[in-house]
Length: 347
Image (cartoon, helix red, strand yellow):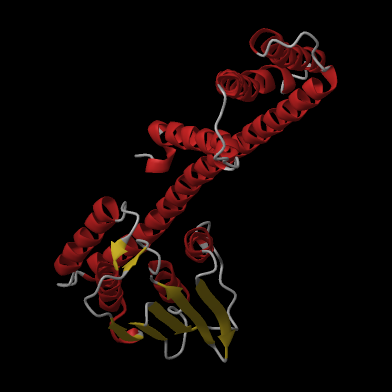
């Protein structure tokens, strides 16, 4: 995956160079200007100060990155406190020696006042040390967050793949049972049913691997499944379907809605008086509304197999993983009816 431009090496180097340039230019930019003539001695002293500050700033930058990229990772994080303290003392003494040598050699002072020298060095040293430490802590935090995010994304992809792989076999078992039923009846509907099954398998094996699918294609998949079930049950189950999806840009996670339909046919058929299944789907204002209801027998205790409930459990998990708070799912039962309603944000 290509990096964002601000994470590329050239952008990082340019940003650091710009920050250092602005930081060390401020004393010169904010310095008051005077129109009085400058003597050659003053000009020479200013020139000496300029070269000293240039070398001093470069040394500070070197210390900044040495502390961030070497001293902290190699000494602090490995709890080598004494060695780190010794390294800081040596660095501080080096800065003091630089200032002392400058005043003695370039400014020609016979006696150097140590108090302002040390105070000047202490503030500059502590500023660079604090900035360097904060920079490294923030940098490590960002790198750690990126690793955690990458790990979570990888786990999410793996988990979604497992959830999807559980849905597919469950669906296949139901459809194959339909085929067995038609074969036993020696129905003329077996051949068109096999053609529909072939289309469904093609969708599951080759198209459902995509992260998103056009909603229209997912609706066609649902309709094919419902047609197979309608052929199986005939007039024994009243099946009412209304799915209105305009030909637009909406996309959805593959095989996200089929478990609700599977569940309706699994538990809404059999020894049920006036079995009925109603399926409704429409979109409006970047939202998907999907409702499935089926009659069920409250007096009978259904014996559940090992795959019972796989669909609804997985679809709830997938909704949480993929859509977070951007969906509303309601599952309830009332007066011999089992209801499932789903509202999903599509943008």
